[in-house]
Length: 326
Image 1: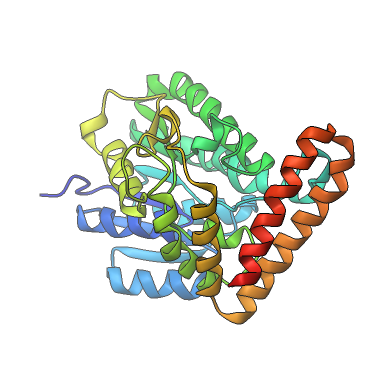
Image 2: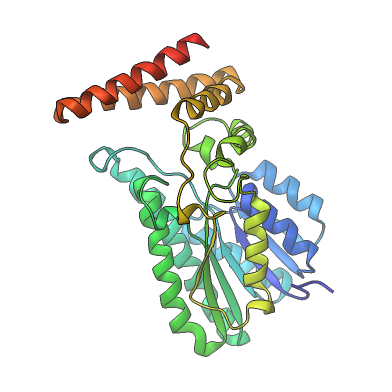
């Protein structure tokens, strides 16, 4: 007997990383149906076929309200109900300081994360009210709690998701509907590679290469895996958590309790090794993005106190020398 026997779920961002791992686990745990929404059609369709007739893939751009509603309608049409909505689709968002973030990219990131979570709730609530039950799970992030763990629009969106979860929990509890969030930490997924704009396959490769770096960041000395978050989602989706609502479950290996100090040179070494393991085109993209970042830093150095500026320049020179050696 599975933990999700008879339940129907919609999972966005289901073609890769956390969403793919969760789709597999939900099917394994007896879900009657799983609608997998994503824009990575090749992988989404391939995964759904492997998972069998209880899994259906649908191209779903969560920045488009019509796409979200279509995925919800498909779940009800094919399986007769909707018990779990896991709003998980995401992008890294544009990096840079506040004044450098393009407004249109800011809006796009908020739409993919916070606005999509709102729309998933908006269009699912009437269905769940009629059923007298339902469960919302939304992917937040450690970036919602601490600066330096995500881009500006990404971090703000993830913080907003936590408050949306609290509001939904209070508003919907009387109807038998629960709402919770998950805040992953250093999880080895393609989002790191996507931040540099490299190919989807290259991003998947970066996820594997990042495991060594992520393992050195937190109390539990291994990289977080998509399956770690999938297990948390399973708990929140199942009846085992029937008295839990309005919480944000941190799945971060202890990262928010305090980062493990790292040797800067060792970190640089791992970074260079990771880049060298990629395809030439992806190497070129990452190198160009890094150079753009360095150029911006150099331009802003003139506004920094001389003693601090000198330390930054020396550190950058050491990194450049090590890169040239390899």
